[in-house]
Length: 59
Image (cartoon, rainbow, N blue to C red; front, side, top):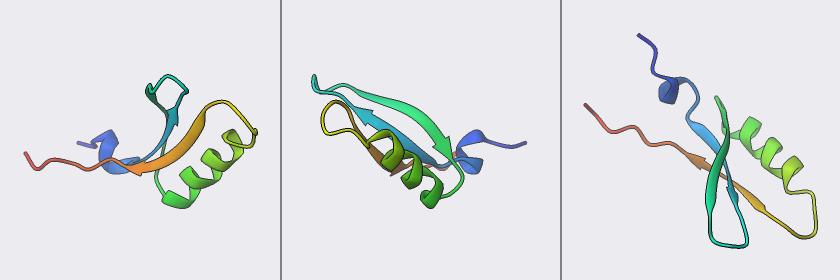
């Protein structure tokens, strides 16, 4: 059985001006996630996008 977290552990997170955080995309590699975050964050103002790795908790 595949666990989505194991396949796509890298997340692009959106931080808005009000302190809210949203997961907007999941990727298999950090490089893919970083490229998307940089593309989305290409504006001078507004939301900020960052990359985080989803840590799996052992069952």
